Length: 337
Ligand SMILES: NC(=O)c1ccc[n+]([C@@H]2O[C@H](COP(=O)([O-])OP(=O)(O)OC[C@H]3O[C@@H](n4cnc5c(N)ncnc54)[C@H](OP(=O)(O)O)[C@@H]3O)[C@@H](O)[C@H]2O)c1
Image (cartoon, rainbow, N blue to C red):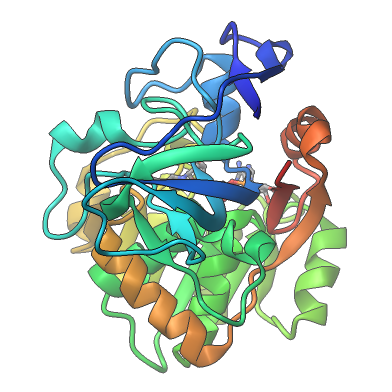
């Protein structure tokens, strides 16, 4: 079968396409024919050797996110069957309840082998059925970016209609946060550094947008948009470089979800968290239980992920390069082999 590996890790040139024997499912395992994968910011960090949150295995198959159909099941499989359309869970062992540090090594696309292959073998516990109205390409965008936004806003944040959500940028997590918040009847304020992308947001009917390049004090603009009150929920994707601004844009007693590290250069004064009586949540993607809940909502709302571009399997390197250019709006998909 065709499979990509990162060999060596350190530059995108390490992404190599090869041929390997097809993996066969063992006890309570399944083989999935991968029909589509998608890229996340983490995949760039894994490939360039700058991902620090977990240990990366040698020569990993990259990409955490993929969807496909089950083509073979091993002995003892009862949860799924051949022909089922499924997506893999980002952290294979986190099925429900609290996260446990021991699960970290089971994360796909680095700590464990990922999805950029013709066929992968996972535990039967490590997949969820995909919503019927979604194509494989659309479903492949869900495991990391969508689930992270869902975890923050619903599993943690208990978002309700009429509340206001701030989301940073127009990448994968941010656009899912936007779509989920609108689905729930919340108001959304989005920041972006690109006028072209702001035009695309407006075409989607998003009216509350702030250009963080043209308006470096964008937190003030967000406060003004909320009559000086601040937002109820801040989806914080920048990290150290934007944390203080997101906090300043938060209402007293609001919730900030610390997710990303797109802008990691600044000091954070913890006294400001106290001054805001802020609830600060560190978010790690999400469990299978959350993935099920999210998929029910996506199916009910017939929500369609925003896909910017799709690449053929043989052009995976071009997909990485395009992602690294940050020209994308929403998700980038690589079709199956
Ligand atoms: N904790 C977790 O479990 C978890 C899960 C998923 C993602 N993440 C993290 O969340 C972040 C977003 O991930 P993603 O996959 O959605 O990334 P992505 O698709 O690459 O999103 C990048 C977008 O963010 C915006 N951006 C870039 N730098 C920015 C800055 N300094 N300030 C504000 N916005 C900025 C840009 O949008 P514009 O061009 O519109 O400005 C850019 O296109 C990453 O740091 C990722 O590692 C963490």
